[in-house]
Amino acid sequence: MIRIGHGYDVHQLVPERALILGGVTVPHSHGLLGHSDADALLHAVCDAILGALALGDLGRHFPDTAIEFKDIASTELLRRVISLAHLSDYTIGNLDATIVAQKPRLTEHLPEMVSTIASLCQCSSGHINVKATTTEKLGFEGRLEGISAHAVVLLTRTQSTL
Image 1: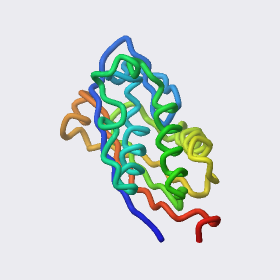
Image 2: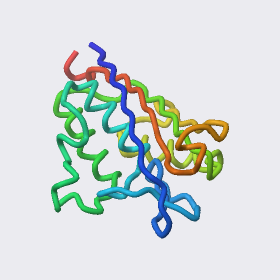
Image 3: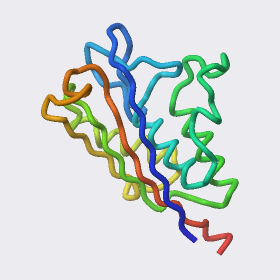
Image 4: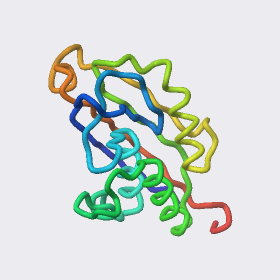
């Protein structure tokens, strides 16, 4: 059996915060604002997995009103979400994600993001695809106000449950 989920996340760009995307710190003058480390890519990935499992969204499991999640690394959030998938006997079949950002240029960081996400998801890098695009200076991303990310995931039953 397969299950498919879609995730979307957006965070505002602000000065004096590290820019973390896909679990990778990207050199930039601004970072993303949020209750956690605001990794929009990993948040979209988590939402896609939770959606495929029919378990709601990231805010339901890790509310931004809860002090225990203040400044939590999104890598830890993804570890916990993957644990939920494994408890339900699902694993990543494949994951396709897109980061939407006018700046900074992300191409050189994408392989490390793929590697990090694959490690966190306990799957091969060949199951993970991450790409980046701009909006040709249109919208909030184009005006350098924020960064968004989309993710689509296909979960498959683990071999032990087939």
